[in-house]
Figure 1: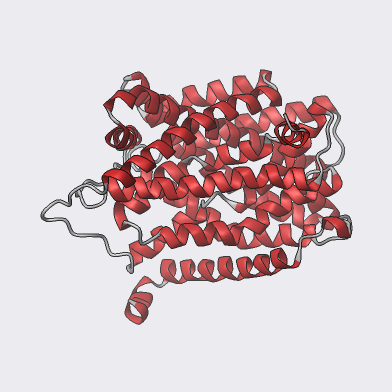
Figure 2: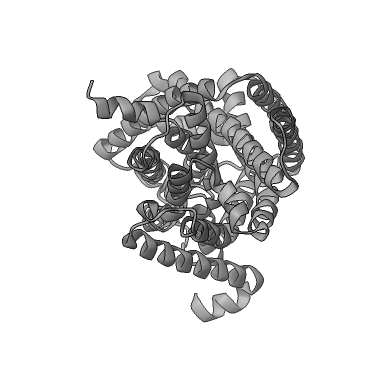
Length: 426
């Protein structure tokens, strides 16, 4: 095997973990809903969101490649106010985000095992399993597990995607009336879709922490080119799969008059049925297992990512901790995240779409500040000139900040003044 290929596989890991985090609710739920409700009208929104958010995720990997430290450490060097801003942004986000992904995972688990339990009970089981794995497991085990899970979903989705392109869309129901995108509900959904496309910007710190952990475990410090190759590999996969899920929704559900279920188990059944319609009924068990495994990987990655990020943030705010203190802090944060997310889930038992929209809209609203923080840190003095972003990426970052800011303002206008907005623009 070529030495460059060997090095790539040695570095490969944080990018796959990033993809595993992304390919969850944003793809299985939101991208599918986009196609099912609006056909291909939101394809541009998916592409634009992936393009304009790219620099802020890339900056996190770039910073770690340049300094060997996580970008959260860069926040501390830039100013304590940035650490506090990141912490305050993350606390509400981590609770709602974890609740949303676990809610969907619970429905897929119930569908897979064929046991009809309330979603909150499935969530308790999932949280317990995740915390046990994270308390006794290691990064390398998580790394290898998610590579395998990601491959299964990738192949299944691409197979279904090609199949629906070959067979074409389903026949529309005679009385079918399409949903109007240029409406209050349509615009709010578009903002929610972009909120997690490919995922929330504040989650960019995780790739930095995972890259730092990967280097510590393997003893190998990748070059900038290798780090960005790993990140870009994961990022491109997430963008392609988002388009695939939108296409599945547009070709299999749109026009049938079938509504996406608001119940997590009901949605799980619809999702798997969508795949079996495209591939064949023989694939039911495979797809059910792949879909659950993917969402479970998202759940455990979200708990791990927020646990690591909050542990590092508090360490930098409060001062130095030894290894034992950091481990205790990490476990306490995972318990806090699980308990808080469970309390949220208990309030949304039969309201999947509202919970997901709440999580994704929250992520979009905080995106401009999260993106600005990464932009400031990667341009700071501790990043040498050789590691600074190229000009085109700088320009794209500025354009991205403008894009995110404008849509955040639009959200607040639509949210607080829907009547005025409707009269003026719709």
